[in-house]
Length: 85
Image 1 (tube, rainbow, N blue to C red):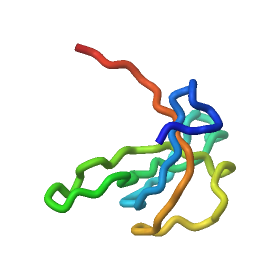
Image 2: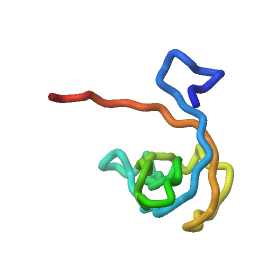
Image 3: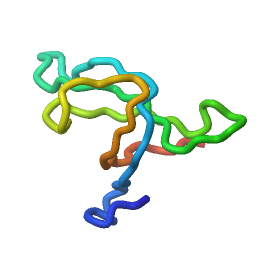
């Protein structure tokens, strides 16, 4: 659902299921550490990977310390990118 707090910046509030994660850093200096989370946002009884997306999160923006596959998580993400034809 579009975020009520930031509706004009492609931000979306979500509740999802953590499928997988891996630690990463955005900069070569490792100063921006975080995780790439694979989150299932919508379930479909016949299609296992129906609406799963990858979300980058920094450790500073997490309100808990340990990630566990299968846990339910909530938050806000911002869609960025380009569509090519």
